[in-house]
Image (cartoon, rainbow, N blue to C red; front, side, top):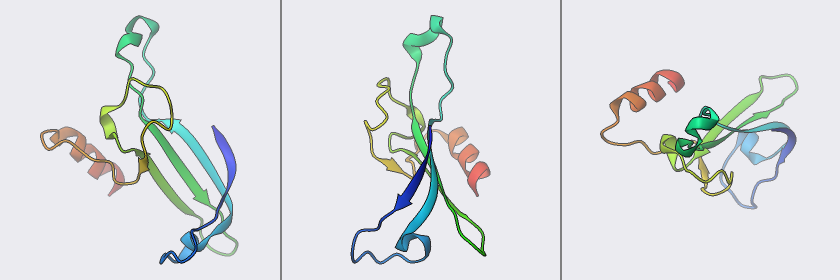
Length: 107
């Protein structure tokens, strides 16, 4: 799902730049897990995610990304707002493959 958005900050917050507020943004709500064929639906996991593009005039736009705090493990519940969203999803200490994939993708 894609929609127009506006960032209205909480009064007194210490952030600067676009986090001071933005009238023009585009938000995309999605799920980072692949959909399984119906025969495997009992194993389906959901990991809600979002991306926001803050639009600007005379300079580059700014992007923000995040996903469910449940991280890459997913949930069986398809409710998008079951967990808070974060741009620092937790990893598993014994899951080096996922950790390296995230590092290579975003660093």
